[in-house]
Length: 626
Image (tube, rainbow, N blue to C red; front, side, top):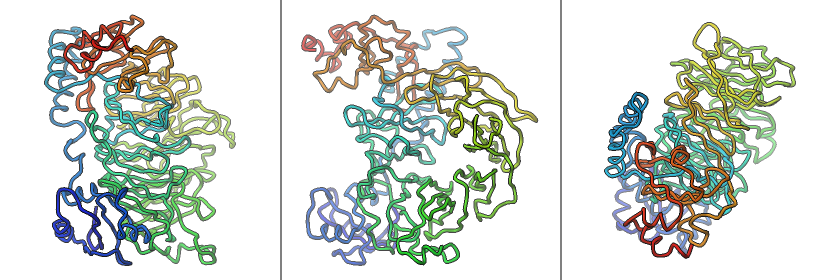
């Protein structure tokens, strides 16, 4: 959080340091600390916003000032947050295990599972603290997803289930296994709203829109049973649905299209650590979290001059540029579809242009393409047309990729489109048309961008087709070449192509991880099964609830992280090995088939198999109460 030049008031007694010490350190950071809340106050830090009801806090609320908690102050003064102690997503010991796993996979293909595999698995469990994990954390349909910028992890999220809780699941692409499950109170996003999950550029923090109107930063690799929320803000005054927002590349700031007294709508607030409560729409227009109070004269409309309260809003979509200096947005707040860029430093709009309803920025921030009776390309820095237009009709979705330093565009045309255009995929290098793929998409009429996936290299692409499969195409020659066709789950509507050449086909209730080069299935999961048989650990003890999982409709199973699974229907190890994983540091999956797995028929047997583990002693004593 940047506090240079800002006037701050500290309220209450902060555990761990005196108020005068906090004042001195804030002043060293360039802030001005005062004792009273006045019209000049810009930020307030409170020891306990929920319980402190003193006059200073009441005055801060009356003036609608941003109120941060003590956790935010502590992180600011320490210049750190919890995620800094976790390192890169795959570094150190985890990186060494990735290399070992790769070597052992090669050995398995050549010689089968050997004693070396078993010895390595014992070491992973004993020395690295691996725990056994099942992937069935979602209790509702998958509502949103996001691939990490490094391409190694997929995040999937759900809205609320029966317990008013949703779930964020982190999947390792290379193995097709779930490596972490984080419960999210109030659920993630809402059906029909995009981008409720956003990663930071370094893949170390993840932003969520959750519990209807909250935004927060989380540690996607949080330790088991550890703290996961890094920061949280509530600035939309209890809005009944998510609003457009964008996590900054550093994961420590967020733009929110919230209410605003300014003509350039929205605000940019810190998301470093702790909690922030603020209603931006009632703030003073000059507040540093807000954008320009008045839009540039050459961009104003007659309506803005004639009526107060008309603002330019990113009410359609918004993202940050890669360097974090610009916001790229589209909206219809002034009665027409417009694209515009906001300079973050000044809060002023750099350029604005009318566009068609369909528009996307290229990954390198150099081009904006939109569809308006044909594809039209704009210079994303100036907003001016670059002179390139195409007569291609019927386009209903656009998806950018990158090949080297060249952005590549896939323009998707659905069957039965209003223009009567032949369905297929139009491929462009930057704004230059390359070729057409004559394939029929999975949907009729409107086609969604998520049904196409670019390979990370940009040399290939994949598309869901009308026959319920995914076609993989090579796009690195003079002509496109169909390489192979892959089977995908029924109702799959999303393709994601990540690191290690892994494709994911996704539906609201299923995930399938495939090797794009061979078609090998790495992981295949269907959620929301409801077996009629009773749960092996019953329903009386809440602390056993998360141990239950249903890989199919046959029966409930129960898992213990020490390596014991209750399977009442007598299923064998192989079916369980296909879905379970040993996980290390909530970011690496290790094959279960390489080591021991105790599969038992009932809780009493599980108690014996668990030995001295806490659950083992409990089950041996109270198994008959289940």
